[in-house]
Amino acid sequence: MEQPGGEYLKEADEINLLDYVKVIWKHKILIIFIVCIVTAATAIISLLQTPIYEAKAVIIPSGVVSKDTGPASFLASQFGIAPPTTPISAEIVNILKSLTLKEKIINRYNLLPLFFGKKPSKEQSGDDPMWAGIRYLASITKVNFIQRDNIVEISIQFNDPKIVRDLVNYTLAELNEHMSYEAKRVANTNKKYLEVEIDKVADPFIRAKIYGLIAQQIETVMMAELKENFAFKMLDSPRIPDRRIKPKRTQMVLIAFIVAFFLGVMVAFVKEYTDKIRNKN
Image 1 (cartoon, helix red, strand yellow):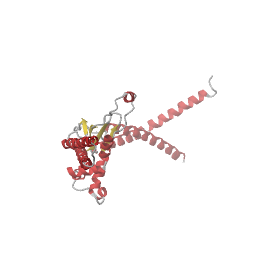
Image 2 (spheres, rainbow, N blue to C red; image 1 turned 45 degrees about the vertical axis):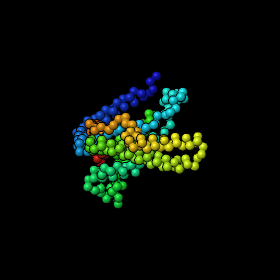
Image 3 (tube, rainbow, N blue to C red; image 1 turned 180 degrees about the horizontal axis):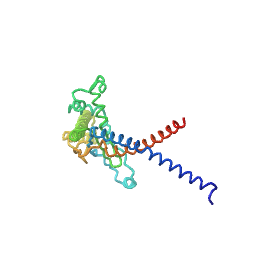
Image 4 (tube, rainbow, N blue to C red; image 1 turned 135 degrees about the vertical axis):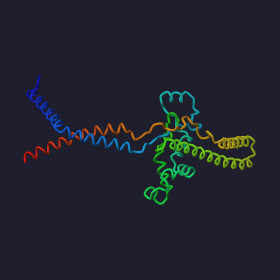
């Protein structure tokens, strides 16, 4: 059953909608002007912005595969439950995010002139230019650990496609160098300790165990000396990007067009309202 006055309300809504359309049509020149100005300005700004490129590498830390291959591990993988993070995975992620590694990369490859030209400004560096370089490298570097697959993604953004690929390679090379050095240092320290301890032990069974541990330390040192693929295996090596990641010019212009249209409509209604008040006075 139709409510009393329903036809009147419907007619009123149609009249109001028609009034809105009339206002928009009346000020169409103003709306078109605003849309054109805002859209053109956005297009020009997007063209003037420096293109940014991204290079990415995907690595799998050596030894991250879980040794638990029993039924529980199989069922967990089937239901998408990720295995616990192993120490080597956590170590690699923490080193990649560390300021120490970034400082080593900057020093080894002399990256401060690349980042800032001849010299970083006082606002960028404060009293220490190295801090400016570390902060900048940290801001353009992203490390993402995908626990379920036990892989680490390293991505860097920069304004030169070849240099950004090189920056990822520098990071991976320094990571491998750092981890191989630390592995050798720890293994040599353990080896010296075990060699001292073995002279104190008379039990042949325990001595055989210690000799086995010493052999493991020697093996670690030998593997670290090889360096290549010591700390991780490369799944996807960084490539020179063929497309910029930003600015996204088409998206920027489209958003500017939509925003400008609504802005123009709003300005049109404000102008119509002020004109009516002025005419009444």
